[in-house]
Length: 196
Image 1 (cartoon, rainbow, N blue to C red):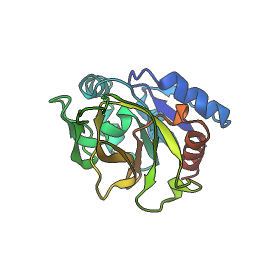
Image 2 (spheres, rainbow, N blue to C red):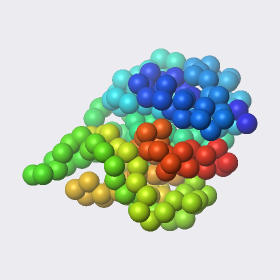
Image 3 (tube, one colour):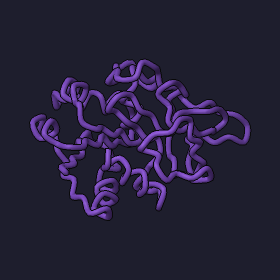
Image 4 (cartoon, helix red, strand yellow):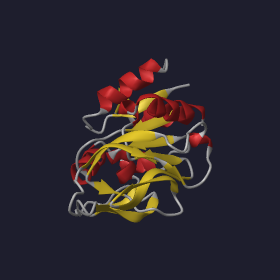
């Protein structure tokens, strides 16, 4: 197994790397297209804004590389949002692997945005990535933008209204929450991803 973390400038890269090390996997940070293509599993972590993240991927000439990958690819937090066509956060196009748009979470009385804290993952359809996930299992979220629920949704969550917590389209997967901060649930899901 050869796992790499795409160094797109996300601030959660170190914590994702440590979470993988706890599973016995040393995943280097890479920007080299050849190393990304050669990996068995690719993880695109990110915290921040869609526009600057996509600009960095373009500067590194990695947009086409990521779109063409055939091995399992996992977007974490902002990395999930980058899998979509666009984000209302920016005019910069995203990777376009899922044909939908990420939108800002709606604010309402008593509803805090950003969405921060633990929330329940509601499975929408079975998948090997979700193996062992229980009906009451929760993950840790920190985000202001979210992807809609659709055919790509493996698990959803509700913060005011439903949004996609885990997505899948072909060999591309995404987790809106932080698996590296989600205790046993996050560890389980990362382990499942590495078996895909």
